[in-house]
Image (tube, rainbow, N blue to C red; front, side, top):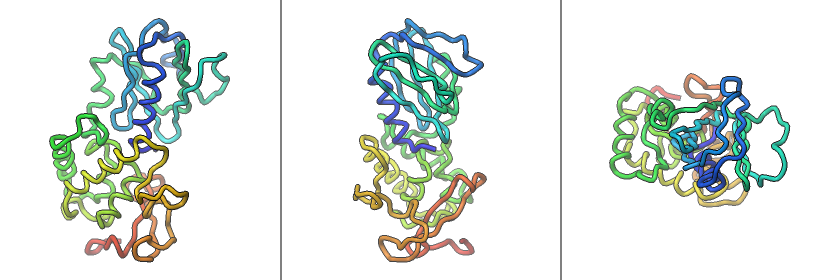
Length: 267
C-alpha cells in the first residue's frame, strides 16, 4: 500500500491538473456509480488525508478514492479518448488534462460536508499543512492508548496517526533503535518517534521514492527496509524480516537484531 507521501504527491498532481477547471469528462466505471455525471462542475481542490484522496467539486460533492494495494492515478494530456483498459475505475478530465484512476480500491461520491464518513476515523495526518505540536501530541496520545500493542503494529494503524506504511515503519524504528515487537508502553520517547516519522515523510513528499539514509543512489536509499539477509549499514549484522500483525503475509517488517534489541521474551 502506498506511503502517505506518495498519496500526497498524487493529490498534488490531481490538484494541478484539475482544480479551477470545469470537468468535460466524467466516467465512473464502478457499477454503483455508473450513472453519475460530474461534467460541467468545476473542481475546487484535490487533497490527501492520510492515504485517502478527496477531489472536491462545486455543488458540495467530493469524489473519495483510496489506492489500497494496487491503485494509481495517472495524469496525461487530454488528447483523444481514454484508453480501453479494464483496470480503469474512474476518469476525470477537462479541456487540457485527463486523470485516470487505475485499480482504485475505493471509489465513492460523498457530500463534502460529510467527508468525515470516509476520513473521520483517521488520526493526525503527518503531512497535514496544520501539523504542529497539537497534532503531534494527539498522535502520541492515541499511540499510548494501547500500551501492550507492538509498536510496529501501532504505527501502521491509521487511526493512531495517518500516513505511515511498511517502509517508514521499518525505517523509523531502526533510526530510533526500537525493535518492532516492543510494546508501545515500553517504547522510549514516543514524541521523538512521531516527530521523526513526520520529518521523513515531509522530506520525501517532493521527490520520487523514499530516501531515509540521505543517499539517493540506487540500492542505498534505505537502512533496513527490503534488505533482509544483507548486512546492517551500521553494524554489519544480518537484517531480519518477518510478518507482523493480523495481515502478516502483507505487513512484512525489517529490523537489525543488534541495533534494535528485542524486548524481554521477544523475537
